[in-house]
Image (cartoon, rainbow, N blue to C red; front, side):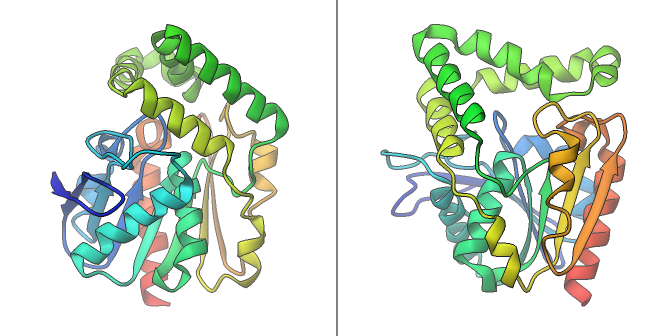
Length: 267
């Protein structure tokens, strides 16, 4: 991995592969850049692919204080500045989608397209915020392992879990690597994030929505409510897929992101 250091981030780590138009993939929680392992090799044949570890994940760190989606977006901008890149398409999964939305809000001119993979522009509901507070209490009181082992399997569709238990176990092990303080910081960042539904009204970039029919975290009907908001919307609904299509339905995601990227770079 490439590592750089900036004012806000003592260490920013990212993979850069391939050639062509720039495509940035932002992972969700609790994961790191390796989450894209099933789709990155194929996409890097056609695009310059940048896969960061978001601050607090993998090998990337932040300077302290509160973590926010805006800070995550700034980390992406810092990487792009280091690479001399001024225009990108960003695909963000779940928490990575929240960071991508913050990037779209802060740096709209740098964006050629936005792909939201099992993600939402809505802020957390009061019920969801309360759930995050309870999770933070569990983690803070020594329950990190319990939290990860309960959360990660719930990200996958029931049928996938039954057929590929090894994939779920690998993701649990990956999640367990995260530092407790960073897990709490990311939970707080998600809990406190802004509602960004309004940014689509004046958005000049196309938006892609990737939806899992069996997503336990983002209900199907609520996910569909967003899909008309931008001026140009690409919508893909995956049957028998939960919250982790990059592992559950990698072939479809590879094709859909590639098709969307071609549109964004040639329209």
